[in-house]
Length: 477
Image (cartoon, rainbow, N blue to C red):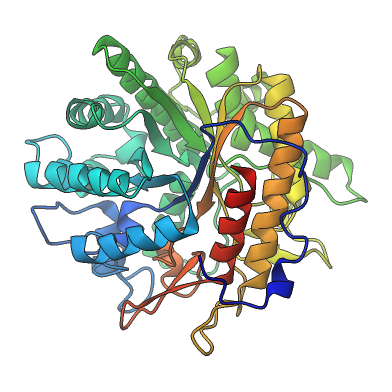
């Protein structure tokens, strides 16, 4: 792959952890999600998703911000060109999601075979380029008909998702070995909470409410429980169908930090924040129980989260073959105004930060070490890791020198390898994202890709970060 940039940029960049050999078959990849890249929203029988409602009908991302075109990735002529770019980056795996409303337009009815044929052809086209597929069944594009029935807040969603999952297993298990069942439950729920605020006319709070507060605890924990049970039921259907492969979920895990002069209230809120963001999922999956401190808090708040006696055991019994981890940044937490549990997130003065939080690669090592020591060292796939920085992604003289993103990727791979050297069982690493794309309510203002996309012309330009990543993959294979 020709290096378009000054070679000094790469001096000593790939020499760290040089004595540690990555195991054969390690997945070096990049990731995307259907609604964020595909466009072609009215083609080949696709039904509407909740995001068509949010962005097209209600314009919650701003005037004219929709997924109607995005990067036109559903178009085969376009994606074939993109696959050749991915091949140049030397990845051996591509993580993408299948659109539920393309496969089943109303969420529960007949299968749209045109969509099935499209995704099967896409998988075959990736394979022809030497790239395997890591398929995500669900990356937030809830069919609108089901969203109108309550979405994940409705316990019936467990069966809705299982029906969809069985359709995917029937039509794709001969091609795919690894499936991510559901992506980032807590972030999706936070997006829906934010949407409800916007729809009510409250645009003051632009921070994504990922950490459940007293205000959002009921809807969050109820939805999380249903999502975990949906994944568990789909896993049981996979097992009962005699299919072969590995299944897991992709969780947005994030260490919770406090400032150096944290008060007792700060630390108490941080512990609960860790419980709702991290331990709620990990304890259910690996210990068969929900955290006692969170259940006690819920009881004291007199709210009904709909958890039944055997729910956590059912989730543990699914025995997912891997844990997908989406890591971007830790969350700094302090106590907000008022009594009781009332966390607020902040970024300490002087802390380097991306669009998606503080840049702390050491916290990826800490997270992976925690998974190894507290949860039995399961097989881990880092299903997303990446960053975007204000003002960095500028196309100048045919180049995009995204040095901050390059540094971010390099340092987080080093952090991952450090935990692998300590014994963590990690099978893959995926950069988010392969391309610049639609960033939900942020629209097209923030870029996260290793491939630059001109929104008007759809022209692609490989960024500096992709060249760096290619060099790392070449050195570590």
